[in-house]
Image 1 (cartoon, rainbow, N blue to C red):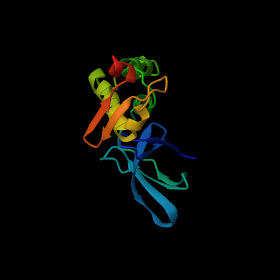
Image 2: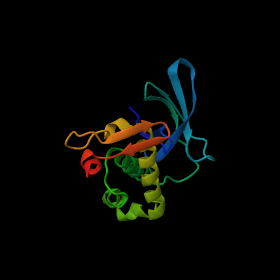
Image 3: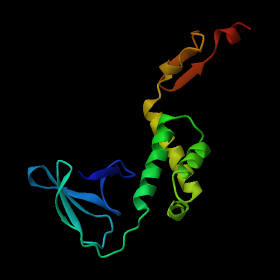
Image 4: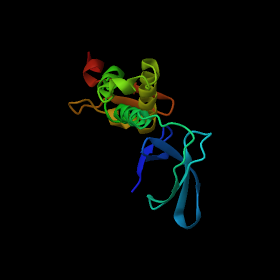
Amino acid sequence: MAKFISSQKGNRKLVLGDYMYTKKREGSNGKEVWVCETRTCQSIVHTLDDAIVKSSTEHNHAPIHSKVKISEVRLNMKRRAEETEESPRLVFQQSLTQVSLEDAHHLPSRATLTRDICRRRQNAGASGANAEDYGNTINGDRFLRVNQPDMLIFAAQGLLDS
């Protein structure tokens, strides 16, 4: 079986050794045709049901040994940004512990990674946010007072009474 990871845009990438491939097209009978991620390389792989059927592993470039690991770390950072409420700094710092010193120089800048985390969190929040989820306080008291398409008003009853 071949190993697959997700690209930054959520598409699958095929990983063979230290090389990554992007899907070029759907072939006949459910086959998938993959090309080396380096645009000038002519290496092609054919898969069927995620198993390698045919491979021309002649690459015209050297592999970047840490590229797969760096991609996995970045995906993990984005996943944690969506699933947890940890600060971007904490996500960044804990993810760096997964990267060896030899591979760290392949990472983007700290500002880029922090921006990726914040953007992923904003996008995840925008799609999953629902005002009704915040309609009550922890004690169960009504908190959402007005819920209109262009306006939300929140207020706890205790503050309204005083």
